[in-house]
Picture (spheres, rainbow, N blue to C red):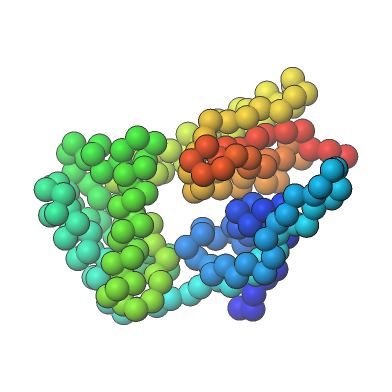
Length: 210
């Protein structure tokens, strides 16, 4: 598939826009930054960021085996007892770690789980010499969190509509902000945007104009 160009105020917002438009997660496409976004001076309009995104489709016959072995190794390093289950053996791969007392693998707001998934991806690259789209969950945490965020997004959208004013959500990692953006992408009454920097980045739900 050829690259698709996306325009937004910042590169990060362009990436989030690409995720919503393509229906893919960040690890399922490559990003080429063509132009960084620049703020205007003294009220003048600045330049928007421009990126090109190229969906990545990887395939390895033994990918599932490799990822499972890597997760088992990481669990051993962490001295955690858990079973790695394959939820999907198609790209993107989906794996879930099950067992008792696995909260240590999730961490506050899923930060430890996000790190575990990222380290797993890096180790997979080392073994397979290619970037392989995959997700790692622990005891279905991500699904529960996704369902919770979807319900919250829909509820807050109704609040924005009835109160006629924007609502800013708490800071969230990129994958959780994406859930909110996608949940409300087709809402006729509200729209969403991300504000802030780094770990303080959050989603604002506001009335759709026009």
